[in-house]
Length: 139
Image (cartoon, rainbow, N blue to C red; front, side, top):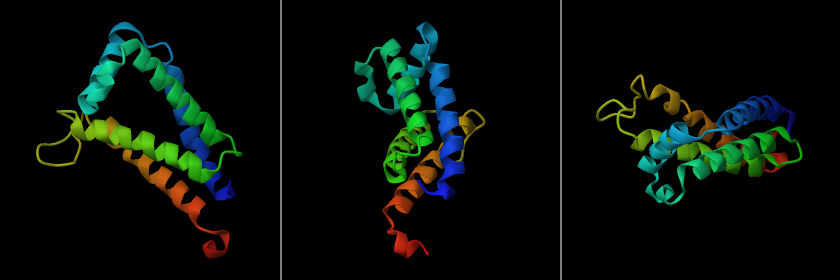
């Protein structure tokens, strides 16, 4: 891991760990609401029961957060995971009614929380690209 990646990986890693810990005990209506929103964007998730979906989501966020914080995990690899996770959130934002202004990608007040997740995609792609560029070309 490059020293320049430390602030990015540490801040997003801590955020992801906190998010995963927060979702760790989602049950009942809270798990159902999270699952319903995800199913609206990705219908295939309907096959997973809401409580199980909440656990998988929590564990995914915990694993991604830990991978970001562990310096031994290559930046390109953790960047791929971050890009994929962020892309799922962006898809959720784009496909959930009421989160965007009509005919636009601009968020409504209700959509601002998810619209900001585009930064996860940008950060992930930055880590992937920087990890793929040979050291001699970075100078």
